[in-house]
Length: 90
Image 1 (cartoon, rainbow, N blue to C red):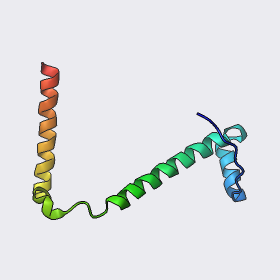
Image 2: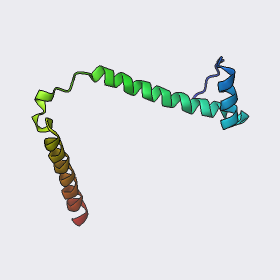
Image 3: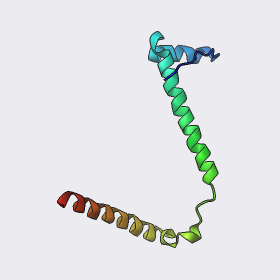
């Protein structure tokens, strides 16, 4: 992985907290991990926004009540259990 040096200006209290938590020699790693987590969250939120409206309740009548949802989940779990039995019993 290639690295880039950048200059950041952050509030003093954040700089102190990062140093307190990660230590002077661990700040870059700490900030890299924090930025990676934030970027993942932003990408997920973007994907959710892009998919908004894709789900139409009328296209999924099997999930239009709590009872039907519970049955659907039970069916999926049973299928998984049956599949695992086939895999490990063969």
